[in-house]
Image (cartoon, rainbow, N blue to C red):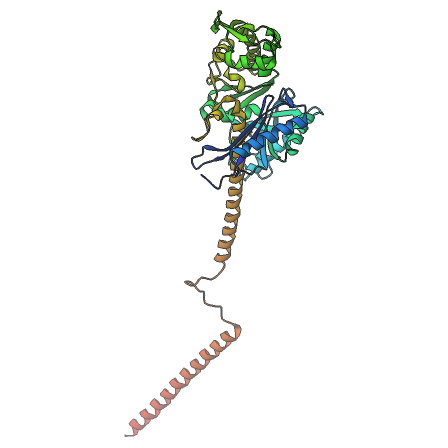
Length: 467
């Protein structure tokens, strides 16, 4: 196991369950699960915390179960999923004009672009949860996915901004913090689920993630590697359970059990002569429930949810021909029998179940491969994405600092005389005067020597003449 990688914990606060999963990536980039715990959720409805005390108890119970699976764990920070009716999204456009146009576009420019979007005017009771860049524009060049390293004067981008109600976000924060934890980041649940069940080819081909949870159904649409749209549909598995309870006159626990064990999303696939026997209450006779009738109730609500999916796809101009990757169904509600057939019939696109084992290492318990844990696994992957981005930024900054330091060292060394070439020092004025004096003395001595030789020769010639 890669001991340098941190342990990251995902906390999924859902309408029917609260799950905590701890994981760490191994040397092969796969996620190894180190701890898992869950608890029944009582304080959450339609993805929103309505009873903080009950939510705190459920979070603590999930943590205790997680510690029980691995007593060596120490959990202080968590990545938390967020959903609910209050979640909204909008599209914006931002631009900056760079001062130093000779320098390459850097991460600092991108960060400035993103940070400027947090100043976008939104309703007073809302809060920006996330700002997601879609496509960049550099001067006149469009549809750029990675502008860092390019040159340009004007840099812009299209953004997908996700907002939520301030009070709903505050209630989540309070519930987690009073449980003794710190929130590292809030992540929209369909984006977390998408990370867990999708691969790179899915992002490029064009897919719609339909996460059918207990209180809501979350939608995220990707096309050519870009997040095109997100939405929260205000119906989920709880609504189906309540429909069964009211339509068949049974208890809620009985309705949930029938949905899971005998439920069909497509009534035509249910046998008309099959019945379920429900024990009578307080001495009453048992009740016979038609499996066909049960399937009709389930199909009616699931068709309504899928009609919302079709509506949102049409709103953004994404018909079934553009979704080459089809529709990926995940979440607890995706386990209904024959839901794939109903989805394909309603939307006209191919469909499949998204299991969160795309990035899991071997050796985990089988329960974690169920679609209901896609959000929790995706939260861990989101945490690792942040960790790797932060590490990359630190490494780039380290390289820049070292490069600058080495350049200064080399410049300093180039000004210092080296051992293999030493210039002769320039002579001083005194040394110049002494050298000139020596030259004059040598010239005078040479002149006197010549005169002496001539006088000797003259006397020698006179003596020779006398003889």
